Amino acid sequence: MNSAETPSNPPQHLQAPAPAQQEPAPAVDDEIDIDLFAKLKLRTATIESVEAVPKSKKLYCIQVDVGDLGKRQIVSGIAQHYTPEQLVGRQIVIVANLKPAKLMGVESRGMLLAASTDGDGLLALLTPDKPICPGARVR
Image (cartoon, rainbow, N blue to C red):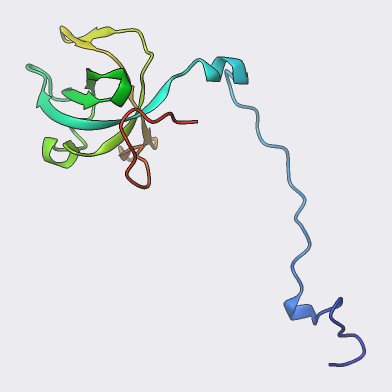
């Protein structure tokens, strides 16, 4: 160790880089506050069955178990991205307190969450990274 290298002054190649100047994050349209976000009831759900919605190429009628919230039906436009066999048994994240809606005449009582990128058509379901009981709160 030379005189410039002390435990509090390591050699240059071992020193952590100086923190980069961070630019402010760009503004996001339609920002919400924490109180509005807290109104969303995000829960885990386990997919029990999947059927194609008649006369639709995009929609599945999905039966899910949401634990203490019971079983419910969600209609989702993911048929071009997943087969029923890829979905049954899978755990997903849903919005459990969405008002019921009818799609192609079929009632949906929730919305599953998925990420997508513009342009390439890629869609990925949001799932827990390890098994968890149906109905677990997502925070």
